Length: 198
Image 1 (cartoon, rainbow, N blue to C red):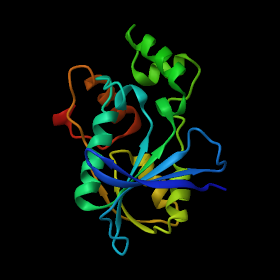
Image 2: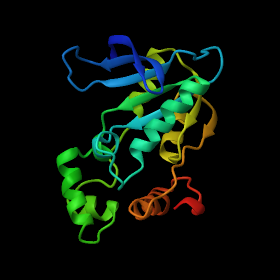
Image 3: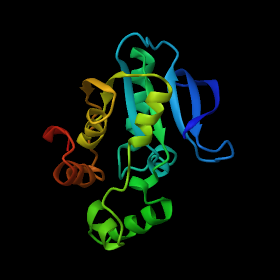
Image 4: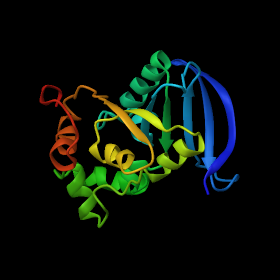
């Protein structure tokens, strides 16, 4: 059973957040995280972002995806409006950084993100958002506004005991490098993206 292993207040450039580590094991070096704005009103629907780890985008500011920009935008949003980010350790749609770099190498030869994963014998997207639902339940959060463009995340909430009050779009404009990646997100995965931005 996943549970709280540690928590502390962490000041960031976006504001101060309560960071809570969730894992089955207190010695887990890569726990999932809840990042909660200090001005969150839990008596109202809570703004929530399910965010999967992306070291290339978040740490190294890769232009191939918008993950780092989405995380920054989500932190800014929840600082201003209250809410939380559930940070899931699912690097590269849960294929890991080594396979992700192998997929990037195939993309350099003309394959898109889905084709590259399949060529490696991997799922197009192997993520699960069930643990995010578990974290919401541990925190006794039952009513949320979900910050997402991903219909799969919406489906997870709708099929859970959590009430989905609304969906809040979190769209980052495409650059010349990420445009194809975002097009694949829209065409293959059905992400709710405006044509103007990709």
